[in-house]
Image 1 (cartoon, rainbow, N blue to C red):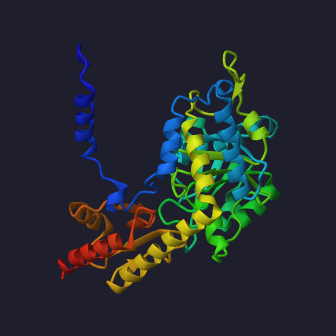
Image 2: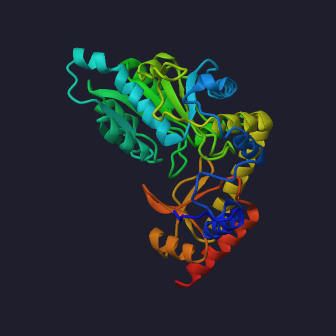
Image 3: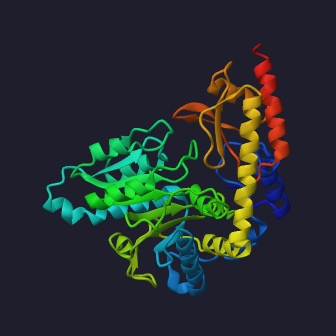
Length: 392
């Protein structure tokens, strides 16, 4: 740094120059992200609690009470009010904690059963965070094949569970296509085999319950299924909380206990989270937005997202594009008959549109988050049609 500091005006003028290089959600041009504009209520609450540190919760008893209420509200939303967990940074940390809990729970059993190397089975559509978790925790990662609708193949799972399997992962709202794995069947298999089942509902957790309220009739995916041991849910996605606001929920407190390490110099003498210093601002923001929105508010939000999703899907077909499959949640994946997905993504980027390309299968992937409006989709379709016409 320089010997002499800048003035406040100089600092913020320079910051603005950097910020001007960023894309913004409100522009409608970010089409490939699962994040969105944080609600002003959540932003204000976050800023009010910037000094809080839930890594030392005895110093911030009010903020800790907010975190506990958030976990209870989310548990109630996901089929079991009396759950245990924490507000953390996001889905990656939540998934890492779940795999750590599963591994630690089986350590004694592993010794007794001569476990060669603990393994986890995840669908090929699982988030990349499970590869991180396997690497960090020394787990062997098995990727289950997908069925014709890009969900975990149950037959593959049944045939590949072994004495080394410490956890199975199902996804409720896959990152690439928004698909929901057959969680009820996974629950039955894991119960029968006495295997830990984790459900990654980072994306779908703030959608599926509210869509079911209006008649979508998605199958059970949460703690209402006896085999589900833990769940990931991200309020900073469809929950409208600021980044970073993720949550890990456990059916029983023992899953947290098995990860505890001693923290003798803090006000809480044991800690199970990955990070030590942990902002309480995320808990306050999640509490504020959930209380403000209520179930009715989130139903309206989910309804609007699905209306825009269906609008995009219909118009893509009308314009000659090919859907990978019918959207289950607010993600649409499609291809052009004239140009491959990666080349199309590059052309869209040149026109100012930030889309992503899915890997399984390769396709343009659009996530219809709350910042996306109908007028944005109309402009997007027009751009797509112009690009496609240029190949005639």
